[in-house]
Amino acid sequence: MSAAGRKKGHITVPHIRERKGADPIVSLTAYSAPMASLLDPHIDLFIVGDSVGMVFYGMDSTLGVTLEMMIGHGAAVVRGSEKACVVVDMPFGSYQESESQAFRNAAKVMQETGCDAVKLEGGMEMADTIAFLTARGIPVMGHVGLMPQSVNTLGGYRARGRGKAEATKIISDARTIEDAGVFSIVVEGVVEPLARKVTNAVAVPTIGIGASAECDGQVLVTEDMVGLFNDFTPSFVKRYGELGSLVAKAAEAYGKDVRARRFPAAEHCFKVKNNNS
Ligand code: KIV
Image (cartoon, rainbow, N blue to C red):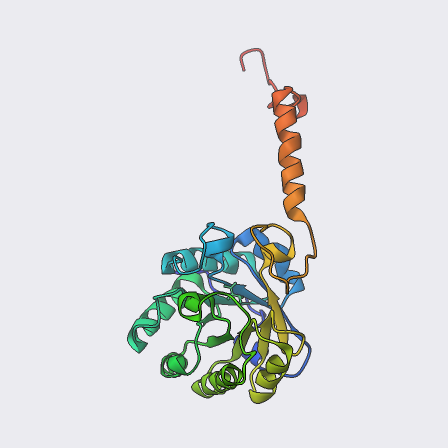
């Protein structure tokens, strides 16, 4: 399968890279073409996150997400967006084994979705892989702090970097992956002073999620932001809409109409053209 590719004039990886310390970068997740086309005029950057596993497929972590799922959703978001830069997450198990495994799978994601870049989780342990990919034409966004793919080794989804040793490690992770060539870094689930230190420590933009306003940009999971995912809402999420209750109300009204035979009404039916039809 080959990808449609990005439209001319869209926001590119170098544009995002140049936004360090400038206007905040506005980012949201998307997994589908219709959602991407609604969001695209209002944002700079899509992250097609492996959060799709929990938000879209009802999994209880991101670990079960496959490369094929990410390619399907990544290609849909590329088709639905004109302006924003599109970054697709590399799922768990698709890049950690070796540099060549990471290159093969990242190249497949780039070729089959037409996205601008890939994102992978990890600090210094992923530096050689990041250097390998970026030297071979694959732009990489990093991801430090709370890394959901490491939920089993981190022991849960708690905020990271409250202790000195953990904070120092996160800053040095960010510096190391910057040296390896990332163009931007997602900083997830860290306290404000650490978000500030990480942002000041690197020359590439930081994109925060649950990491305070000290980052160069912000990302939220769209379904959290618009009230379409109600299994749990992290405390750092601000709800800008309540679409979940609108959908439920619409379904309730539809059900009542169907049961009362009010739907479909005459205007929803095909018209009879002549006596025989
Ligand atoms: O999977 C995801 O949604 C993410 C967010 C931090 C963007 O990685």
